[in-house]
Image (tube, rainbow, N blue to C red; front, top):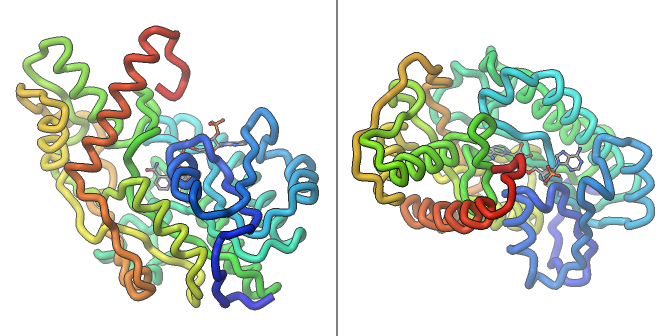
Length: 327
Ligand SMILES: NC(=O)c1ccc[n+]([C@@H]2O[C@H](COP(=O)([O-])OP(=O)(O)OC[C@H]3O[C@@H](n4cnc5c(N)ncnc54)[C@H](OP(=O)(O)O)[C@@H]3O)[C@@H](O)[C@H]2O)c1
């Protein structure tokens, strides 16, 4: 099987989206709805992706031709710092099962979603794909980062040894509908949206942001990433790794101001300097994906408004039930 070569269309193709109920997986499903693909999905209750025997059996029975490998154990700094063994074990198992299974069952192309935390903390900005494995990682999320580096390396190794058309991609921080708003397990945008919303509804004079507000973060709306993953699947990808970012970053203090505006919180934003800043900057150099012709379409204010509308919808629904773990 050639490692390059383009896929003409999704029409009639058997396409597996792992993690299809998660934030990015749901965006991928929305995006592929009208593609003509036969969408294959299996929720965790039906198929635990850490179970090697079950994954192999499922792939042999369902014979996916194209795989968007999105499913993973995902969480914010707190979850990563307190559960590193779970992050390492689950993600190594999931990736090994899906990527090796794709090789053994003859999958034509697989796109694996890694993470920007795989880059060294001291990488030159904007970060090119060549910075991988050139320096130390953020210790708070090292276990998760190492698992994702192993997934990138698996795609590379299977291309080299077997000619597999497996491609890894690295997004920046994601946000959008379907995000996880758990107080301890959320990422930066979801955590801030929740705290700003709660401050507004409690009539509080201030809402608190972790760190001193000076780090910078690049954000990408999940609908933009889903469109990009589709693009990568169809394109004749000659590289094994692509950064997929929006091309600019915001200071945390600018993001907090934007979120306060979107939420309608009119009080003061205060910074809790006892909490870690995390990496100061992680701007991706996305020139390789731009050269393939992909461009982001969602602007930050409009994107944050869609995320907040989703938060409000789910918050109201969940207030009536008992809050499940994702909220
Ligand atoms: N969110 C970000 O900012 C960000 C940034 C960079 C990269 N990424 C990457 O993007 C991908 C999607 O992230 P996301 O934010 O959409 O995560 P998410 O909402 O937590 O979704 C992850 C999905 O994976 C599934 N999953 C996890 N463990 C599983 C298992 N053992 N068996 C079966 N399914 C399992 C989850 O199922 P359940 O619903 O049953 O839990 C969920 O559907 C991940 O690979 C992540 O590493 C995310």
